[in-house]
Image 1 (cartoon, rainbow, N blue to C red):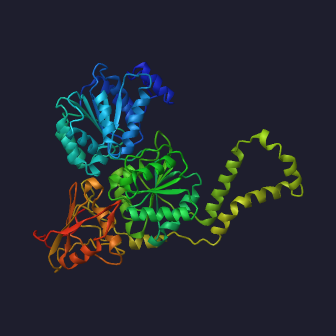
Image 2: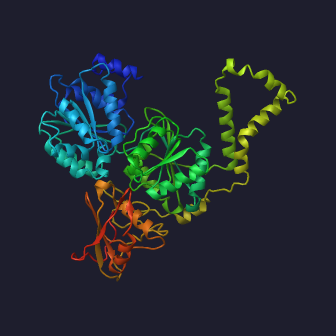
Image 3: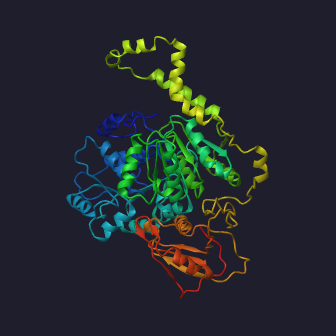
Length: 584
């Protein structure tokens, strides 16, 4: 292991890093820092989140800033407000002993006028989300002609969030001779395309195996009936008394429902999804970061860019839309060399997907049984005893009360006192799990329900309703349970499709999954078949059978998306395609 000084970092920055508690460099830092300092080359770095990427590029770049130039020299692009603020904070911590260095985070949801005033004073490093940076560029409030290095941090996440066009516009604006550093946990086709277009002979640095998960994360799955998912979630949480993690759900509605159930059942939980205001979101995240919330129930979109230390568990209440998303989810635990556990709750129809995930991340899952009531009680009991052994005693305060306590308890012997103490705290678990049923599905049911998919999965595949497509392009035809029917209709004899347009697009967080959830919420108990879906920045065009179009128009007339009403119109002048299946 190398020290930061051995890697070429100046003493003022080494001292700042040491004060943060770091002596030796992490693997990604050992590989990247010398290349950034000594090689003026473009670079692709594939590494999981939480591996020390910010210091890997941040330390050498702040060291290379020209103090005589007060215009932006380094541009760092990242997907979310939270990550933007975190990177800026880290850079300021690294530059603690360099008062001349100026860094500014710019992101949506904050006053653009304040950011414009700060830019006028002179900023050397800009950390930005793509949308807000483009606003500043269009207003001519930022000059990028002095940019020497562009960093794309969590590039795959930015592209997943629909920032492809924004990134293209920004990268066309910066000087052509600038250096580009691309950091990504995975390397899907979209990231590779950006690299080909804007990077020249990049050096590739891979930490671990390409597109794989972190080494110190244990991957576990539990197979239960769909109706037993929530009881299984509670048992798993109870089995880990010190759990501090994120529970991932697929839709905003489900996220809120699961969080509400956990809170009602006495768990320290909150929800995080797109229907929350920025103030609500910030409040939840602050409580989660300081540990006042132990379980954060979140959607993938809402959780993007979150970086919280010491998470013990990631629980996939539902599988994500694609395998790359699973890599991002699981990568939020097991950071900085710590151990972590990533859990998937599967129903019988989804079990075949485990092999696909294993192949993609190059890791093996452990199949575990949902803990029994007795196992949970035992785990909670010894956790409580461990806490009692380690509790700090304020002798000065408590000694005053001890004589009276001794008199009160003198009729009990030591064994009785211990039993009563344990029972006082422990009876609720004993009572709750006294007659708890077995939630595990027998192995015979696994075999009878298992359907191995022979098509190879690659990074360009898109999700079906309850899983992933293979290269045949056919959606997974599973688990419709009252949801829109996404089945392949190429041989049906149905009527033509009508195109509809909704005035919310990728800029508003409206994607295929959100459209599906919006329709589900406003057409309870009905199945509305959808054809092709076309996503743009400001709208979504989608196809519905003509007989359903007026019905859906009425259903969405007073619908809301987040804090805003939606407007839906028919595009009758355009002839929609016939009998198309959903393309995610």
